[in-house]
Image (cartoon, rainbow, N blue to C red):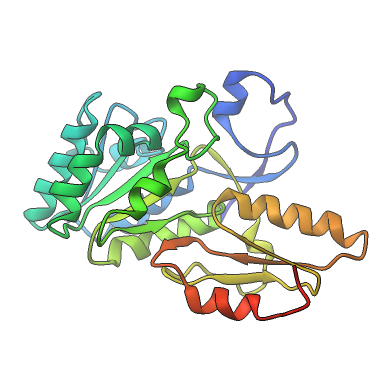
Length: 267
């Protein structure tokens, strides 16, 4: 996997915030979602891509360039996006539907619930700008998406940490039978988990990324990256911080969490 280093530019402007969540000088991989989907779809003609006017901003434009006949631009109509994805899944296709997380969940929740999840359709919903990663302000901040999606029966939820997580998650969620909601980091995505010896994303599994006798941090998504940074800083003060990464929110790997918290002397 080719990587680059994030350019050392001020991160105070809106455009910089939109472009990348990487810290200055951090290693990044460009458009891991789009690249992984293009690679996976090369031998699977049933994979199609749909977006609500946001192909470039969810990295789905790479799929559109590679397979224009399998790409569908639905316009600024998130409910239509989810309804069409459900219809395609009924015909045996594997739709990857992309938009921003705030729009995909809040605007299209009923369609995800009734059209896709109610019938256990094989739709993969991949939504960018999760949490507070947006530079567009409160209207685009998806602070409720996990809470909303966790309440939908039968919906698998994935919250990847970095470019490696995304790259490895794409084929696994595609192979999974049933609906999936994945939080999507796009553009210049940080790369950190390749430094963890033996790490591989496994759908439904939590992974202990580092051990420590004093504190346990359980995290998901890009906050795992921040937890690793904090653990490294605290190690300089002889505080051992363990980090348990839970990239699958639902189903949650409860066994791994219970095992991790059994260490009685650890906060």
